[in-house]
Length: 381
Ligand code: PMP
Image (cartoon, rainbow, N blue to C red):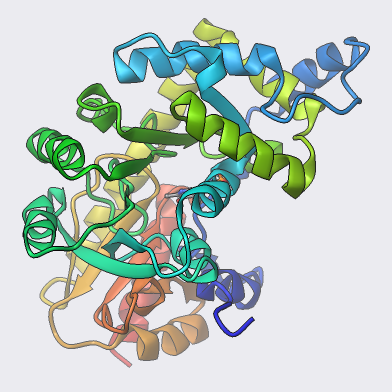
C-alpha cells in the first residue's frame, strides 16, 4: 500500500470540473466529436448478435482481434495474426498486465521523463526500479539510453510513448526509432511502444512504428482517443508467449472484456471508409485547435513561455523561460478560470517545475484563446 499514489491529474480534474473553468487539464476527445450516432447504430447491430451480452474469450472477441490484427499488420509492415492480439480494458490494462507478467519487484525498467502518469502508477505498484531517460524535441534521448546500457544497466523493458508524447507532445524521430530497435536487439530488452495517439496527426503521418525494425517490440494502442474512452477497448500486440501470460493474468483480473463494446469497436474499425473520414475530421479539427493554441500562446505569453511543437495527439508542452513555478501558477490560474496540469505531475523524482501540459482537444479555438488570455492574466498577477 505504501507504494500507491493517486494520479495528480485525476485529483486535479475533480477541482477543475466547475463549469466556469476552461479545462486544458484533461486528455480526452471532445465529446462533440465522438461519433455518437455511428456508435448507436453499432450498438443496435451488436444487440442483434445473440451472444452480445454474454461473457466472451479472455483475449477479446475474435472479430475485433481480426480487425485489430489487420490494422496492426499495416503499422508493423508484417503480417500480425489475431492470436498475437489481446484486447484489454483500455490500453491502461495492457500496461498493468504487462507489468505483472514481465516486471519482478526490483527489476529495472526504463521510462521517459516527463513520464506518462499511468505508466508510473503501474510501475510503482510493481515495485520496479525505475530509471528515466529525458526527452527532447525528437523524443526519447536514445543516446542517453545507450550510455546507460553501456554503463551496465540491464532493463527488462523500455517504455516509450513514441508518437505525440503524453505529456511532452514530441515524436521519436525515424533515426532514433532505428537506434532504439538496435539497442533492444543488442541488449535483449523489450520495448513497449505505447501508441494511442499515432492516428491523430494533423498533416503528416508520423514515422513508422518501432515494431517495423524489431520483433522485440510490444505495441499498445487504443480506441479511446479515436472513437470513445467509454468503450474501454485497447489492445496489445506481442509474441504468443507474452500474449498467453497476459491472457492468464487477465483471467484473474476480469475474466474477459465486454463483448458488447468489442462488437461495437470491431464494427467501427472495420468500416474503413467511415473510419477514414472520421479520422480525417478529427485531424482537421484538432489541427486547427492546436494552431489556435499556438497563436494565442505566442501572442499572450511572448517572452515568458514557449509552446513546444505540436504535430498531433492531444497535448502541447508549455515551458516558462522566466522561472515561473507552474505549481504556484495553477492556483492563480484556477482563480482566473483556467486549469492545466503542472509539469511536476509528470516528474519521476521532482523537477519539471517550470512547465505545463496543455490539452487542446476539448475546446474550440475561441475558448482556447480565452483560456490562454486567462493564463496570461494569472501569470501577470
Ligand atoms: N497510454 C498513454 C500514453 C495514454 O496517454 C493513455 C491515456 N491517457 C493510455 C495509455 C491509456 O488509455 P486507455 O486505457 O483509455 O486506452
